[in-house]
View 1 (tube, rainbow, N blue to C red):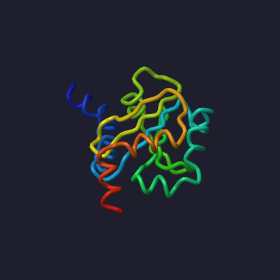
View 2 (cartoon, one colour):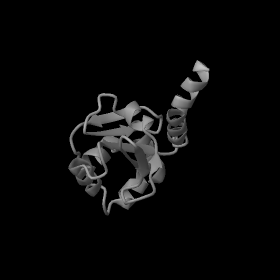
View 3 (cartoon, rainbow, N blue to C red):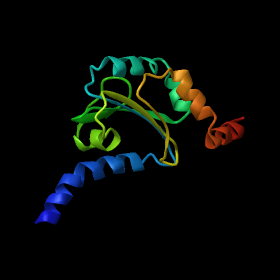
Length: 139
C-alpha cells in the first residue's frame, strides 16, 4: 500500500519528466518558474521573448512557464497542465522567480533568479558547442 501511495505521488513528476525527455536532443528549454502567472518578473521575462519567435525557433528553444500548481508551454497564454510537483522539482527552495536554461543534452546550462535579457540567453546558447556545430552545418 505504501508503494502504491508513493507511486501515485510521484506520477506528476514522472509525467512532466517524460514531457521534458521528449525534448532531449531535439530542443533546448527555458523554464521560467514563478509563484504565479501574474508575477511581475515572469511577465517581464516573457516580454523578452515577445516578437523573437524566429530567434527562438532558430535555436530550437521552447519556453515553459511553471507555477506552483500548473505549467504551460510558450510565451502567450496557453492551456495549463495541472501539476504541483513540477514546481517543486525545479524550485525546491520555493523562490518567487527563477529561470533555467536546459541544453539539448538535458543538462542545466544556466540558472538565474533575475530577469535575463533575451540576448544574454541567446549569446549563452550561441557559445555552446552543439549550437556552433548547428551553425556550421547551416552555413
